[in-house]
Amino acid sequence: MAAKYRILMMILGMMALFGCASHEIKALTPHPIEAYQIRQAVAGVTIAADPYNTKEKVQQAFTLDLSEEGFCPILLVMDNRSNDNILLVKDDIELVDSRGNVLKPTPANVMIEKFEKNKMAYALLGFGIFSYMSAEEANKKMLSDWSGKELPADKILIPNRKAHGVVYFKVGERLTTLPNSTLHIPLRNMRTQEMHSVKLRIAEGVSVPDVERAPSAPK
Image (cartoon, rainbow, N blue to C red):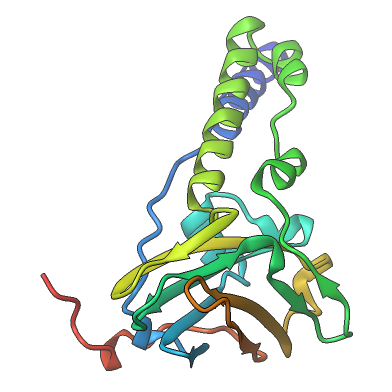
């Protein structure tokens, strides 16, 4: 009886192991920009921010709870209604938290190091090379997913076009300094070289897009 119990526990453990060694890629589809509570228009360009600041919300889009390691993805939705190309450099974005700390974006390939599956551990505890390959495949999917959602290093906002991308910030344990922080987003007019700055205040509480108030997206 004890032997059967141990075998059953081992099988359940293996099932859990393989379940953990997977990554589901989920689509990230933004709402109309008017639906977001956190937004500002400057020089014809509107930028909205949607912080993924709860376990449930972040898992729906990124599979894992990134806040466990202190990371907060912030979705930026952009709409350029000016007549010029506008340059947004990701590394110029700053998040000033509630304590006055200035945070820079964390690249997805750096963030993923905190979440990668330990391939050797899976090989030793699972079924050898098959578990190793399963963990390796999960890591590749994870990097592809999070990098694919990430805002490019240099994003050119084209006139009368919308765009979106995620910026990852290492905010800290339980994201306690995120409420009442301010997101600073510098913009450069590529024709005139004039600089503008969008400042978005992230208030306390969960930001939920108000889809009912937003106009219907054109089909």
